[in-house]
Length: 457
Image (cartoon, rainbow, N blue to C red; front, side, top):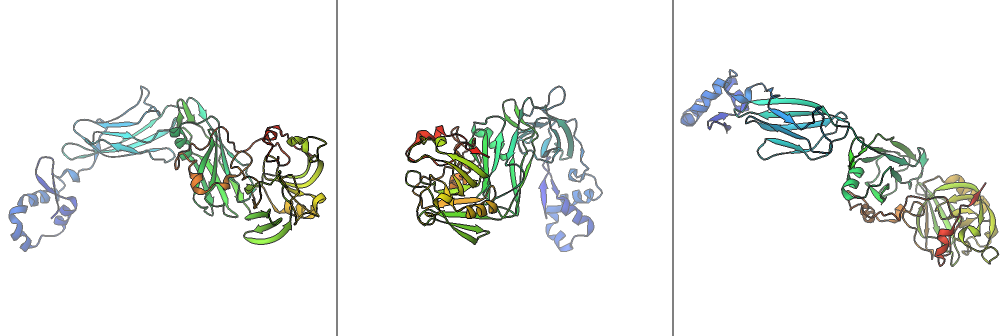
């Protein structure tokens, strides 16, 4: 037999057992064996069959006079402070459910004595909340109260702009979140990051945000995005406190799509570019890469732009006019992969070296026909990878999208939720102004800051 101890010290049967007794008589053998022990509980249960004497069978009463919550004189709650729900007159709180108008739940914690419940997740500013409180008085009678209130409005707006623009991209394109105000401390970064949501259909591999600097985040999955996917990024920061007197506003979500999984792999040691579409080799192209002193960067790059014509001048990268390495050339079918001026482009002047020797100033050169074909078969966001060059590794953030050169464990270290979110600093950026038209010699660092925009037609 199931039994529980009432507040007055007596013993009452559970509701399920009492209903059982009402429905059928108890076996005589059981009564004979236990008549001394169950005489009092039996009487209580028989009385409960009629609906009297058992507080658990009572209909919950309205507990409005006994439940209070923190609010100002206008009845609004301060979103910067925890919500506190209290009961009086010997009652205890048994359950609290708090949601805003969008259905988001507020987590909380009940005190040991059951008298107070406090929220442990922040309230949103300018939002309406519904709180349902269940109680039990000293006699075990249940009570219930539903409270609806508003929080005070935000005093300043914090906004998120997602990039790139809506459209179709390659599987290497990261999602970029640009913030309207800097976020520097760890706790605030965690709040922001937890409200930036990215979804992919079909589903992508597990993903994470990386704090490039205090106003820029990049999001990528562990592996490339699925081909032919729909990717949506949105902020749920509206009304959420980000910092002192700073609350999130309503921001426009972003939806982009991916095309085929295009990967162009250049082996600088064999001077061959292998072009793959959804894993299948479509074309092998003889190329030339950077000569000694102008070695092409190794690593994974992402197509940034496509320019059918670029006037490339050596003076824009600090190479003196009239020197042995100076040039001023019209270049066609140029696919940009770094902001510092590295392209995959037509180089009819070096066809005799393509497939045999590296003679460029850092770009990947090929015949005009091959460059035109390449230009027509890639889109922004496609993967361009270089291996076996004597050049440096592509940097993650300050020269285009080198995000994929970080291992997954390294990437997670840039998250405020998974790894600290302090990897990004003011020196990094998600991009930059269009500045260079070819790669600077590796032994001439001062030229990095001297580069100018290429002239384009």
